[in-house]
Length: 240
Image 1: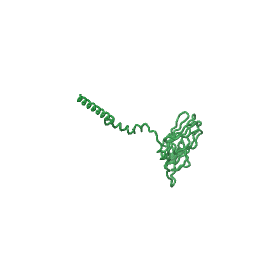
Image 2 (image 1 turned 180 degrees about the vertical axis):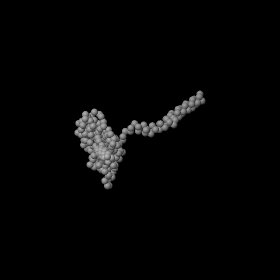
Image 3 (image 1 turned 60 degrees about the horizontal axis):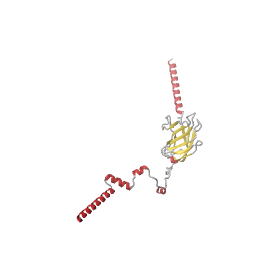
Image 4 (image 1 turned 135 degrees about the vertical axis):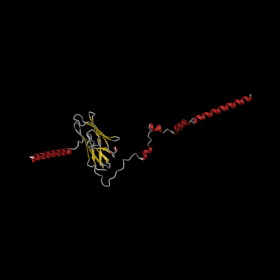
């Protein structure tokens, strides 16, 4: 009898353990929802002229995606990114910290797929592209969390180690010395206020330290005139 009870208990424990193991495997096997997916055939540190493809999944059944705003990861400058392909009528605009692609709304429920080309990827293990996804009804999905387990994870591109001998390329050239020398930009209001002309600076110093040179000149001239008048009167009285 005791052996039968023991066998039933063992069977129950094995069944529970098996169910728990199966549930754990299923939970870990299900991939996290990647609301904006990113991939590249040249996902390697320091790789050059890399095309990166994005797939922004639609979260709305009533409004279409009209704009995607991306904040670039550290090591990629907006000037080093160019547009690849995208929805019909969409255009690319570089921003201070990334870029924006936008245009006519895609069909409601349809993903917005586009690509960009990066001059060179930085020497990193992964790149996070924080994304703001806007719809025709002005609603916005914010895929900006760096924690992959978060509710709004940013798309992350995993990079292979740099190829042997790969080095960072020089930054994009700026204006040539001749252009800088010939250019005569109009000073801003701040520059005008902070950098007065030499004459203005001298006047300000005179105002702070006492009478200006012009004032002293006037005083001396008045004294000379008064002195001349006194001498004239004295001579006239003696003559009389």
